[in-house]
Length: 405
Ligand code: PMT
Image 1: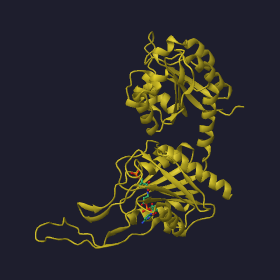
Image 2: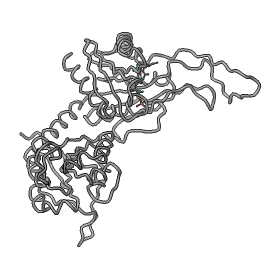
Image 3: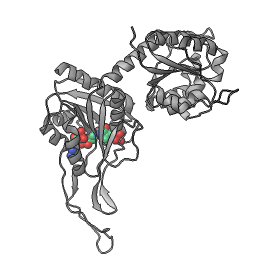
Image 4: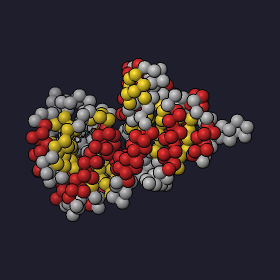
């Protein structure tokens, strides 16, 4: 019954009729052993009193930046660090808009902006507001920021109209919370190594051969594994963005040869190895130690030689019980090419993403993947945020490991 024992949950409550259901949600979370800190927006207090919520949670409710009579400062940063999970239920259209756009004018939104771990929102509003382009846009932004959306249900609304906009029932929200912790804890004690980003192959001190990889997909995987308790090492090429989770160890490299050397070290002891990097297959045969001048010749020939195949080198040293997963970035004959790579590189699974799919591949916040396993299973997923894609990939890897153990 105490499925949430020891878990720290921030319950954010905003100003909507569904706020009365938050008291039930709070009670269910507490009954399952969670420690819950309620954070309310000023408008929420018009719908449910802080006294009810502090009595149920056993903690004073946080709503203002200061306690008026003592001037005591309430730190949203401390709350954000304390929380293993933040659930905003109900989430009004206004709060969703503020969260999506970083409008930090109340304690709830500042806590959200400081949250280090997973965040869920359970929207509740009238059907027209829920369907409006603005709300849909804000929800899409939040989803691509990694926020889990617990979609509103159909039913009678406060306006007595019938449609989609009712907050999900407290029992359903609790089930999602339990599932999140089950998922998150899946990987505790496990080691994961991931190659991330592009490689740069130097031509001269100012030029290189490279590609468009931003590192978003690889780091989404790193974040997902770390949030499930794994010890994660990311061997990353030159990227301009790094994950916020401080527990992720990052080994910075530039070229494919450097990535190969560091990957052989990091992947050796890993239970799961994922090759998300876009490695340059070729490098200039010679490096020129001064800037190549354009004067004097109308043409320039760059001779390229093959780089090491990192995935293959790691797979050739594969240890017992290790699961190795590659990516295939394709532009044509996607499935056939991906299957060839799966075989040739001796991988357990390959994640196919195709540049033919809009919103998939390099630099986007979204991706559309097909997971192809060695046993012939093929699973296609719709376009999702890279963090959600990471979640699907890790779920599948864990499933494979269960079946192979
Ligand atoms: O970083 P983002 O902007 O978020 O973009 C994500 C991504 C498109 C880079 C990512 O989703 C992806 O597809 N990564 C693999 C890109 C790639 O190089 O694919 P490939 O089909 O050329 O290579 C097949 C596999 O072998 C890959 O796992 C690759 O990491 C690995 N490989 C390739 C060449 C090489 N020399 N060594 C390797 O390890």
